[in-house]
Structure formats: structure tokens, C-alpha cells
Length: 136
Image (cartoon, rainbow, N blue to C red; front, top):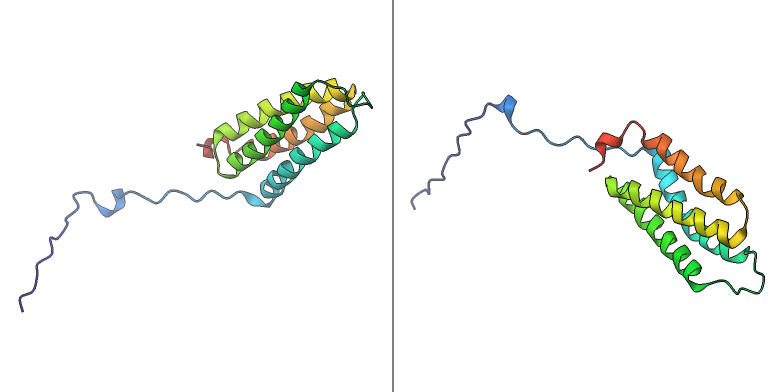
């Protein structure tokens, strides 16, 4: 039996110049907990806004409810995007927060909604402030 000759690959680049493996991104326990809480917060907030509306008879326009649930879904998707280090996740999260603030004020009539919505944004911004270059 004859031995088969394999082509030997000779790299022209020295080993020190070889492509290095990308650095592993570490989320950290703080960011992990906040992203999980953002996912839960987005769903619970939608139900809380519907429960505590100004109109006890429930005669509010359907576009408010639609906007509220779309914002909740967008926040959930945004948190998943941030989890995967996608920059668009941050922008979707900010946009959905603005929608939540507007709809929350229209439904409840209280400015406490602003605090309820801005607090998660502030915490998330503080946690990713030094890691923005890691987002794709």
C-alpha cells in the first residue's frame, strides 16, 4: 500500500502575526441580573398600566393598548439583543422606554411613570458605560 501524500500548508505569516481568537466578552453578574429584571419589568409594567388607568370603565383607545404591548415586546427583544452584545438592543430599549413613558402618562395621568421607566434605563446605562465598544 502506498502512502498518500498530504499537501503541507506553509503559512507565510509568522506565528506571532497569526489571527488571534476574539476576546471573550464577560457580561458580569450585575448586567445579567439587570437584563433579566428588564425582561420581567417590561411584561409586568404593561399589566400594571392597564390595571391602574385613569378610566375605571376601561374606555381608552385601542392604540394605547397596542402601543403598550408593542413597547413591552420591544423591551423584551431589546434586552435579548443587549444580552447578545448587539448595539441595536440599546437603541430599541431607549425607544421602547419613550413609548412606555408616553403611554403610561396618558393612561395613568401620573408622573411617577417617568421614574418607573427611567430607573431601568439609568441602571443599564451605568452598567454598560465602559463597555459600549464591545457592542457590535
